[in-house]
Image 1: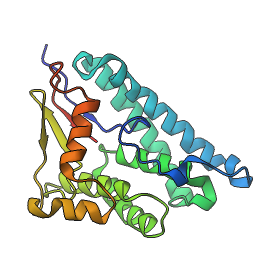
Image 2: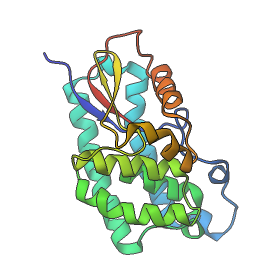
Image 3: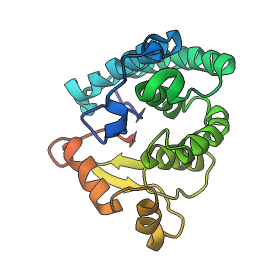
Image 4: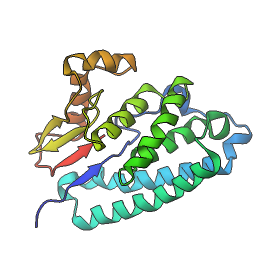
Length: 214
């Protein structure tokens, strides 16, 4: 049986976290229990539970059935998210707190089945970054994802392929300027980012299937 291929677009709190120090605490006021926040956090918990399987058993042990189940669950969560955003618009910290905004972003980033939706949401992510609602890493991740999915070179080097147990960076716009662009969003140099990925995915210790990483 051929090895499964899967877009591993997961953001676990222990790996390359997007959660800034400001996002880690939510004051105990009325929006802490906002129904939208509770729904977003529940969707994120389910999203991460699916992806925890990849960490627990390793990418090399992922079966086609695992892939199909996660993709099915992602699709169902995406439909819920799209309905929520249609009703409420992009959530703000004042509405759902920082962790609710974070949850919404992760779910958008995992919506690869709907690249047009990701592209449409990029405008909201840019506005949220400009307002200080989300970190630069979020903007870099979704920008690169949209560019990659539309056949264009990425800007920040966040989209990487694991192939034959090695990392391959998807094509870059002006590669000699990538660290400058990354620094403009508060990101470390690309070499440091790749070293983090190699350490987290234990590359060089086991044969892994092809997988696109976040």
